[in-house]
Image (cartoon, rainbow, N blue to C red; front, side):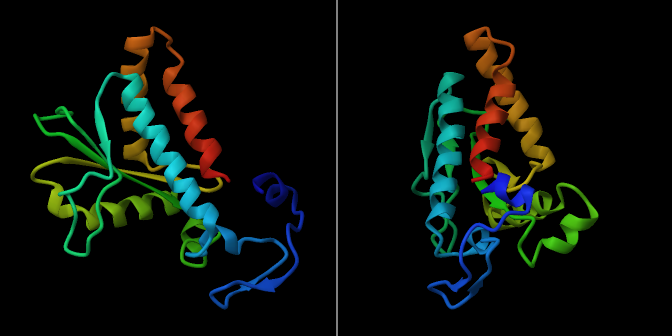
Length: 185
């Protein structure tokens, strides 16, 4: 899909989605539709990559941990079962921001990575109640590019921890490649 978008090729016949929104031949609606199956699949794949990266670094984690939810029932995507920093465990939440969404297109046009930074800020605000007991790390990727700055540092650190176990200095690069491949689906 990403290649077709970059080449300016139409991807589908114009139609109305199940929620009543118009879908044009570009198929951009698939990136933002709450009913889109690819959105959920992409989220789970990215969360699995993060979880497996921790496992490769010999750090045990629990995905979608119970007991860490907000008043609305939402909970972070994962939790380290051992301390990460300042004797606190780390929680993370993955999101994909699309630079093509009406809400992000203006900021994305003015600054690369703006949609990812805005999504990371929203995640940070969503889980502010966890900040006293856990280190919270939002991981926001854009469909067509950047990752939020704090996640880049976090993923580099995690990649270096994996490298210390595997002795392959390219582990951080491999982690970024895996994440970016699924963000663009």
